Image (cartoon, rainbow, N blue to C red; front, side, top):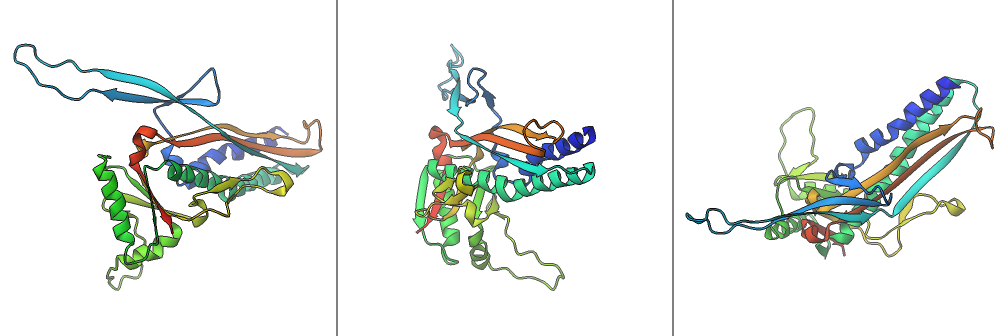
Length: 291
C-alpha cells in the first residue's frame, strides 16, 4: 500500500493550496505574527508605535523620540474538521483518484465557503462603521464613495484597500456605471476595480451578519445564516486592520491495511483558525448592511 499512501497524501497536501487559490479571504492571513509555544491557541501579532515629530534645534539637534513594540496576543477559537471513511479499494490508482476528488469537493464546496463566511462575518462584527441601507443602481456608487470617504477621514492608507461586494450587487453596480462597447467579438462587463480599490465579488451565502457553524451532530454539517441574519452589501477594508491566522493539521490518510478498527481507508482533515479586527485599527473596516 506504499504507493496508495504516497498518492493519497499528495492529494491531501493539495487542500491548502486549493484553499489559497479559491478563497477570497486567504490573502489576509497575517504575516507579522508568531505562535505562542506555551499555548497552541494563542497567536501574537507585532504592534509598533512611535512618537511624532518635534522641533529640530541647531544647538541640540534632533528631539529624541521613542519606538514601542509589543506582541499582542489573540486567541484562536474555531476548531473544525471532518473524517471520511472509504471502503477498501484494491486498485491503488482508483483509491488515489477517489481521495483526490473527495479533497477537491471538500475544499471547494465546504471548507472554502465556511472559512470565508466566518472571516467576512468577523470583519463585519469588528468594523469601525456599520451602515444600514438599501442599495440600488441610483445610490450604490454613492454608498461606496461614502465608505471610502470614511476611511479617508480616519487617515487610513488608500493603497491596498479591498472592497468585498455581495454577488447580488454586481448587476446593480454594472447598471450604475453604464459603458459603451464597440463591435468586439468578446466583451467583459465585470467591474473589478473602482477608484483604486480592488473589487472582490463574494457569493451571498458568505456575506451574512450572523452565521451558525454546525457541529456535525444529527447529520448537520457546515454553516448557515441565522434566521435573524441580514445580508452584508459590501465590506471595505484596509488589510492591515485584520489579524487572521490558521493552524492547520495536514490531512491524514489511514489505509485499510493498517486501520485497526475498520476495513476502510480513512481521510482526516482539521483546521484551527480565527480572524479579528484590531481594535485600534477598526476604522479601517467599513460595512454596509441591507436594510
